[in-house]
Image 1 (cartoon, rainbow, N blue to C red):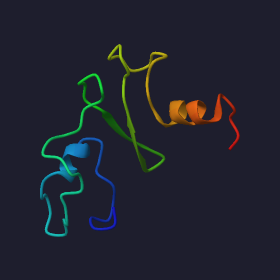
Image 2: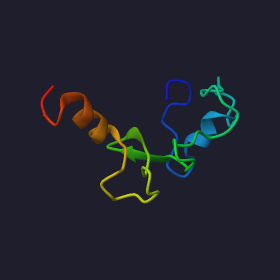
Image 3: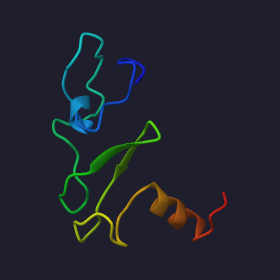
Length: 86
């Protein structure tokens, strides 16, 4: 966002962080040669929520919208033992 003026669009996805796409680009921004996958070998989902990037995994079943999804909310719940306050 600092170099390019905005986060990648959802259409661009996180793969755009790997290759030069603009004269302002100062990447690569990921230390990989290909788009990262989740632990089950599936593509991670990149979204913009309220203008900020969110990356999540569909979890072991490979389907988004099911209880095993892994996202920022599930991480917060794990770290706090289910408490919603920090």
